[in-house]
Length: 637
Image (cartoon, rainbow, N blue to C red):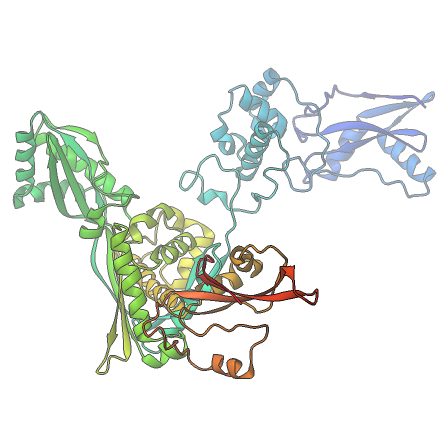
C-alpha cells in the first residue's frame, strides 16, 4: 500500500527538526504488516519522551483516503500484529559504543561548515561530516578533540580517518581507545592520539631496601624477567640491600659560538670565577621554585663553547626545568659577551637519550649505589650455585666481555631490563633508559672464609621524577603510589624522586644476582623455554643434527655444565638418576671445565644400511649444545 507523509514544518534528513530538539534526529520509513510506519530514531539516548511525541505529532501519513499521524499508525500496527510488533526505539549516535551502523547521508561541506561555525558547533554534525571538514582542511586533524569538544569522540574520528587511509576497517580493531582518561594526555603526554597500548604489569618483591619492604611494579612483555627479579629479591630478603644517592643534578648542555676561539676561551674563564658564576646562578634560579644551579662544566672546540648546566630539580625529572633556566642564563651571558651566538639550546653535551661517556663519568640525574652481602647458604639453596661460580661468570661476562665490546656504562648483566620495566610502569620517559641503565656490577667473595658473596651496583645516571610527564597518568600514578613515592613531600623537595632512584638501583641488584646465578648454574635457557616460549621443542628442533633417516629423541634435554658425564643409551640407570640428585661432579678428565652450560641430548635412529640379518642397526647419537642451542659436539655409537 502506498503511503506518504507531510510535516507541519520542513524537516530535512539529518538536519534539526527544531532549535530545541536534538540536531541529529532523523526519520526513515519502514513497511510492516501492510501499513507504512515511520519510526522516530533520535541519535541521542538522552532525548525525552515529550520531544518524541512533539516530533511525531507533526508528521501526517496518508493511508488510503484518510490522514493519520505517526502515533496512530504505530498503535494500529501493534493491534494488527497482536502486540508483537517491535518497532525500533532510541538509537545512540555513531560515536557512542553500541550505536547503529545506519548513518544518514552526510550533508555537503558548505552546509557542514556553516553549522560548525554557528552556535550549534560540531555537536550538530555526524562523524562523517566532521571527517569531510578535516579533509577539506577546515578542521586540523590534530585539533579534533578541541573541535568536537569531546576527547573520546575526537580520538574515534581520528581513528576513522586513519582507517580510511589504511584502507582497512580492522587494522585498529585490537587497539583500544574507549574508557580512558584523555584529559591527562592532551597537551602533556601525546598528540594525534588514536588509542592506548595496554601492557602487562608484574610485581617483584618484596625488596628489602634500607630496612623497608617494597613491592616493585614492572611493565614488560619479556617472560622470565619478573620471575627472575622476584627470585633475586627473595635471595636478598635476609641480608637486605643498602642504598644511597651520592649526587643529584639534571643537565642541559647548549652550544654557543664566538667570532674566535680566543673569545670562547675568555668566556670559559669568566664562568670559572665565583662571582660571575653566582650572577649566572641567580638568573637561572629565578625561573623556578625548585631549580637550583649547582655547576657549569665547559669544553671548547675551536670557536664553539659547550657549557653543561647542572641543577637540582626537586622531585621532577627536570629536563624542561633545566632548559628554561639555561635559556635565561644564556641571555645573561650574552649581556657580558654580546658577540656570542646561541647555536642550540641542546648541543648534545648534556647528554640526553644517547650513550655518552660524560654521563658515565660525571653522572646525570641521580647517582646511586646499592649493595648487599648474600650468605653462602642463600647462594646454594635459593640461587642453586656457588659463590666462586658466580664470581667467575661475573668477571668473564660483566668485566672482560664488556671491555672486549668497548662498552660505555655497560659493565652489567642486564640492568636495562629492570630499569625499562620500572620506567614504563611508573610513567618515566622510556627513552632515558639509555643513560639510566649505566651500571657497573661488582661481585666478590666476602667474609672471613670468603664463603659469602658481596654484590654492588653503581648507577651514575638514573633520570627519574615522581611529578610531571607520564607520572600524571592514572595507571602510572598507581604504580608510584604502590611504591610510596607518588608526588612530592612538603618541605622535602627531591625526596620522592631520590627514593625512586634508590628502589630502581636496589631492584637492579636483585635482577643482576638472579641472572648471573642462572648463567652460573646453567638455568638460563631452561627458564626461558618455560616462561618465554610456547614449547621446549624450539631448542630441540634447532639443535638436532641432520640425519639421513628419521630419529627419535629418547631423553629430555637436560642442562648441565660442560665436562659432566654425558649419559648414553635410551634410559637412565637408577645410579645415574640418583647421581643427578647430588651436586654436579666434574669429569676427572676435565679438572677445570668451563662454566658455560650445555644441553645433552641422546638420539636413537636407524642406519641407511642393513645388517646380515636384514634388520637395520640402531645408532645412538650424543649431541652437546651450548646455551644458545648450537651443537658443540656430536658423537655416534
